[in-house]
Length: 450
Ligand SMILES: [Zn+2]
Ligand SMILES: [Zn+2]
Image (cartoon, protein in one colour):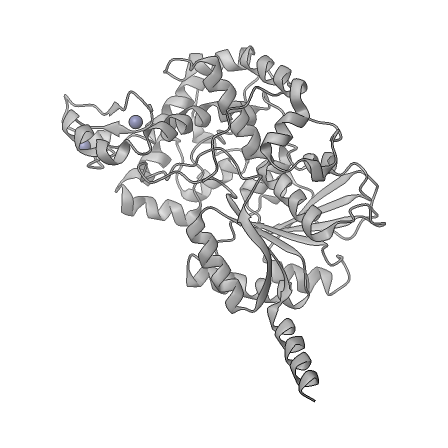
């Protein structure tokens, strides 16, 4: 697990937006279609509660809102307090017996754990029975509950990212500690201004719980920064390690495979500009997001290869599977072969269906010897994914703790006592096939025996 960082505050200019976009509550629980269905098995009735509280009819509508599209006319959220209350309601079930508020007898209500303000109980008996398990995660869940709310400032644009070319060479920025040191005082100033902002006050006036102390809020802002910038910096790590010369004439092309609304959100909030800042001397960066779950509306659609402009970044999207993109675009000469492919939580280890979807892409990356970086959530996923890649005779170049993992804990939504995970906690880099090496070795052996 990524360690908590307790560094001093850091800063970036704040784009103050007075008007909160009430029509797109993106900070709600982000659940993919599979997860949405699995809610039912963990907490029966919960998925219906979520849809009902958010005035939505189906998962598709929920996803549309998460993707930043306008919700249907019956959305009916009238104030910020109303919205936060509805979001909080979606977390209300007894962590021990799983009872929902509407299943309680009239006089009873669910009460929150006072320490983390994140999980609920129907009775002191349930809370006592749950404590031996809950105490292991209570402290981390306290952070989750704060981040969930502070994240709203990222969504509304009241908390923006540092900007400008990196003053340090990318190789000197080995991890978050050095990244925070690099931005130093500028980031400190920015975080202090977010703490003092009207948006921050409005937020805590609206959420029905006391405002945490400044250090807790600074910690949360820092975790959210790492969460927002984890992907672009992980791509940067891949470029630095696997590609090297980013000043290449004609620019560098990165394909982000299996991209979803997460990537769309990050790009629309300028997170990927950090890549451009990381390589101010680049010959130009093209980043193409490729995925079936991509909200293409918020990103320019991929058309064809554009000339590279040094020290700029161009983002585009293609909705579909990567092997189709390869056939339709790269093989037809519409797109260039990538210098790097990145994939965040591809999940091919998780099920046979997911593996079947990924297999053509994995084989293609192997056979065309595309430098690739993937990330996973846990050590267990790392082991399972490495196993699969090795079975496919893919040559693993490096793997381990991602120095740019998100430091924001992620709670298992319907199973709050499960150990929180961190996005992109581990990375795997690979290129080409291990088989060929064996072949060369075999030839070598034959030669020496002659
Ligand atoms: Zn209970
Ligand atoms: Zn607790």
